[in-house]
Amino acid sequence: MLKKRIIPLLLLMDDRLVKTVNFNNFKDVGNPVSSAKIFSNSDADELILLNINRENRLSSSLIPVLKEISEECFIPISVGGGINSFNDASEIIKNGADKIIINSICYENYNFVKSLANKLGRQAVVASIDVKKINNKYVLFSNCGKKLNQISLEEHISKLIKNNVGEIMINSIDCEGTMSGPDLDLVMQVTNISNVPIIYSSGVGNYDHIKDIFKISEVSAVACGSLFNFTDSNPIRVKSYLKNYNINLRIF
Image (cartoon, rainbow, N blue to C red):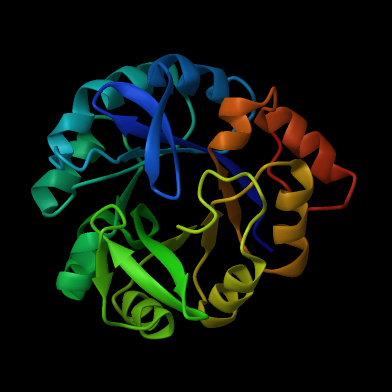
């Protein structure tokens, strides 16, 4: 059984760390390099770094801060935002990333997923999916939550898996940044569909939320933003709490 992971989620707007609610209402929460260093020293399993600047989608804008973070951190770093070619991905890897996160490009070209997996290794390719519930049905958005895609969650995941994606990250637009709890129905639906590791993100506001995700599903990792930005929590404290419930965690 794969050990569960706790992953701090860093959202970047230019060279600043920000937090959002429902993919909007951007709030500056500090220096990404300083935050990443703290997470690296407090037993985080990985870091996720995403460029969410809707005006500047160039993946190259991530390079300066990625370089600084990779010099300060000694844990795996997954990076996404505006990656649309192998050259984009290659530059991100060369500058310190261990995994590439792709989202919008997947809907346009599923073969790009396979191409990246062939060149970088399947384990280095993560597909991020942004989900919103409309009329009691899950629908998929891309382009930082602005573009509706006419494909079902089940079909999209199936196509990603057929094209050798290594991991899938699920983000609930409805829950994101609210700290009011995860969408457990979404968690269950995705884990029932997928046979590759799942990272869940959105809505986590306390340790019980993380425990519930791990207890009811086969989710491999939980990515947290607001929990670490707006409380005194850190990965060490999260893991200490979860150990009481016999959750199989990575411990360094």
